[in-house]
Length: 286
Image (cartoon, rainbow, N blue to C red; front, side, top):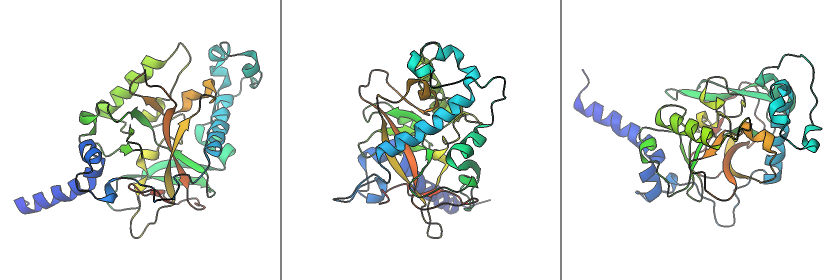
């Protein structure tokens, strides 16, 4: 039977790892340690890739997903302007290829969740086919988007998937429990008939958008340097409405003005098949 001292040390070790995702700790930065907050050095930048390039990459991939599933999108297409409908053609009775095959054909690589190569790290994200070029958008961080004044305390307890943006906006990437229920509720609230404003499939084992696994990217270590970095991206108003169904984020409140906040993971270097993705949880990687 373990001693009380060993149990306490185990709990302390777990808390030291988890506390950086516990909302009150993050919000107050209780220990005044820069590791608890992402930051941009003076004169630095938070952009590994230009917003226009991020948007182009997402639209290109989402359009490929939409086109391959066009036979299931007829009701939605009928609501769109003729100029938009003319961009898509019905391929006949062809079967819809798996999302991974669409991703590989469009982007030249695929990613998936697998047991991490790090001891006791749980699930990780790996490049399964092809290779990721430096500067490419490789993944997205899914979840409910909270303004810094909105209630997320109970969702944050025991939740290692809370992501804090530079301006205090929080993204809850947990796909279980209260977090899962909140996301599904918000998605039903914002859906307009067949027009979906977000993707709920990331809550399952088979996401329609295979990029939506960024919450499972593990933190780098002394032996495994970061090969991706987080980049905040505000979805512009011009983003095609028919493609928003593949965005794995939704606002907690429906009356928040301004663009939807998303977070993408961008490759810091060429990443080859079989490599695990590693990020840096606490700082911007320049």
